[in-house]
Amino acid sequence: MGFLQKEPLEYVDPATYGGWMTRGIPRIGDVLFTTEAPLANVAQLDTDERVVFAQRIIVLQPVGKDIDATFLKYFLMSDSAQRKILQKGTGATVQGIKASLLKKIEISFPKLAGQHRIVKILDEAFENIATAKANAEKNLQNARALFESHLQSIFNQTGDDWINNRIQDVCQIRPPKSEARGIVQSFEHVSFVPMEDLCIGEKYARASKTRPLSEVDGSYTYFAEGDVLLAKITPCFENGKLGIARNLERGIGFGSSEFIVFRPNSLLCNEWLYYFLRRERFRLEGAAQMAGAVGQKRVIKEFIENCLIPVPPISEQRRLVETLDSLVTETRRLESIYQAKIAALDELKKSLLHQAFNGDL
Image (cartoon, rainbow, N blue to C red):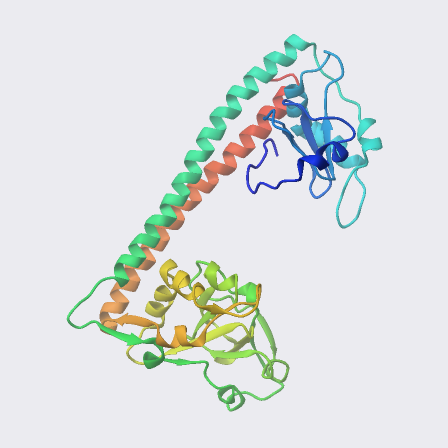
């Protein structure tokens, strides 16, 4: 809404250009309007290079000299214009508008001098807002990068009492389902965690659903209170979907067959393992060793089992986990500040548009 995204770029053969753009050749400054998926996104063509527009995009060129193209862009972005357009929209699943209906929407506008004044004010304000938003987004990225850097630095440490172990030597991987059958009856409910409930950047997995044991102990993955869950399939693995199982019904849970379950032994704290698996380096190394068809790739078993994890004494693990927990809290505080600033800037744009087309600018 309001601008053209530059990436990704797609191309057509120059010979097809004339045949495709039969209704007219777009010019720099033309207003672009999407008729569906999504409806009523508006931007302005900012290049004099030849551009092909696909279906569901209407190119608007002012007739005569009564209306300024940039004014038209801003007007179509305003709440009042968007409401009129959406009221004319049709469709249940995906809302859209026909060109014939779009043409009938009435608009009002001042004389050119008034349009130019509004455009000048909005151009300057939106440029400043864009700069402020870019700074806030950069600060948001920096806060996350700082946490990732500190997280990696902790696992790069060494000490006389630190030992590198293969994960399979300090964890039971994928505990047997027979444990669950020995604790609860088939009709009793246990926690159920589908893939969508395993979050990114959250230490604990959500366990808000329950299902009878008889419904889940066939094809789903078993885990228990305190086990660490990791998504093994793309793109969930690369995105960092993992968490510690907590507050499980009867201490037992089942979930997606795409989970890897880790149960640390007495040498390893489950929160230390969680932070180790959360690192970007771990995800990059695992992604480089995935196997399977496109869209169904999974991190290989050998990588997981043989991955070396530094294991300091339990007391040291817990002390460092507390440090990381504090850093997570501070990072989230900064994220909330920058996200609130970004949201406020978006609301400021809407407010300025509202004022501009209600005579209050």
